[in-house]
Amino acid sequence: MIQPVKEKIILGIDPGTTIMGYGVLRVAGTKPEMIAMGIIDLRKFGDHYLKLRHIHERVLGIIESYLPDELAIEAPFFGKNVQSMLKLGRAQGVAMAAALSRDIPITEYAPLKIKMAITGNGQASKEQVADMLQRMLHFPKEEMPVFMDATDGLAAAYCHFLQMGRPVAEKGYHGWKDFIAKNPDKVKR
Image (cartoon, rainbow, N blue to C red):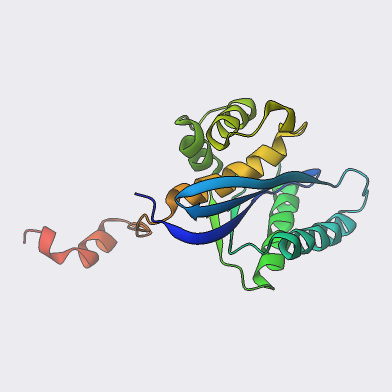
């Protein structure tokens, strides 16, 4: 059950090195409302370091505009291209550093978890995620962005909203020895 709050602003970010998406949700009581969504377009920057600077400046600008209470960010998934993964991780890290510089708590969500939370299908397409968000948040089709990265950022924020009030699961166990150490009452000797 989602715990009611007086008001909370959640910034969601879908990291990228070409297009970075973001969405902002306002939660009043238990009702979410989309405030904004958009992209940070990095295509005009040839140099990766200039992209990182632009990400930092734009994320700080978004933070200053909407004053989010929390940041939900999509965790990079593992790809085959190590260089691409490194660059994506840097982009995500710069966005996180901008939030941390303003004392905003961060929660990372796996892409599969975000898709599952929004559509019930961890393999859903970007279009399916966008369509479900449009229905759940009741914004007009005309406000649907050209780049689905924006709705992916909004999806991260909405996934975080759905987690409100849910207990955080323990990290789990690191093998049988760890399980036994944490659960001595469940082991017969």
